[in-house]
Amino acid sequence: MEGSALLVASWNVNSIRARLERVTAWLDRQRPDVLCLQETKVTDEAFPAETFGAFGYESTVFGQKSYNGVAILSRLPVEGVTRGMDDSEEDSSARLLGGNVGGARIYSVYVPNGQVVGSEAWEFKLRWLARLKSYLLLHHRPDERVVLCGDFNIAPEERDVYNPQFWKSTVLFHPIVREALTDLSSFGLVDTFRLHNEAGGLYSWWDYRAMAFPRNLGLRIDLMLATRGLAPQCSAASIDREARKGTGASDHAPILARFEL
Image (cartoon, rainbow, N blue to C red; front, side):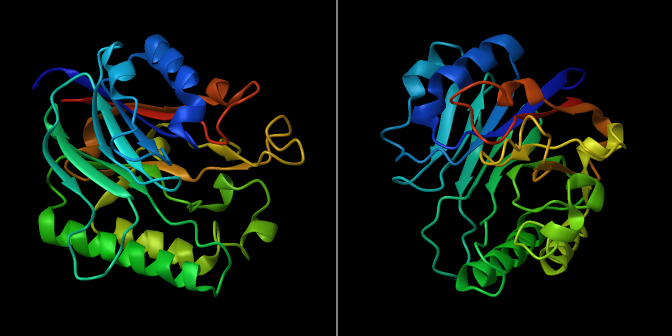
């Protein structure tokens, strides 16, 4: 695929069955080469692969009933598929799916939320991020073309949060989890959105409550992190805020990045 562009998107759909019509309509409008999904909340057998096939997308899935679940929809062949982190920790959650697409290694990532700071879920989140870094160190080099797309459940900086003072005590913006994200990124990962967008107040997630979306009370917790070997080829990155509008929307907006390969 040398000499061509690869448009990669990512979207936490908060149930693919509840959001199927929205996702197919968005695919028909935007036509990304790859769409990584999170929180599909269906088993592999129940994933609507035939529906996406009618739109020209091959489905690669790693799901479970009612919770979690990640997928990669691609207009190009997906090869070398991996599911999970193949380490020694017992983990039944479907949160990491990888495949080779169009000259790059692409991962759909759904980082644990963590629930409450100090809880077992919080500790699991921190361990999961450390495991992900170990996985990268074992399987990749920073000079390779690798991109991690998904819901990281972490806002990296104050400009990514509408009220930093409030959110710094929560699992989405606590200094400890932000440090864990910094440690993960030290592998050699670059936040592609910030290569092209410096302003604050640009978010990817808004709570369903308190009119958060129309008031733009959001956080940027959906990220597309590219290795140093791929980031220089990122020519554009954006958040499709329009896709968050209307009734029946996911609480997340899709994110996109274009890579000139």
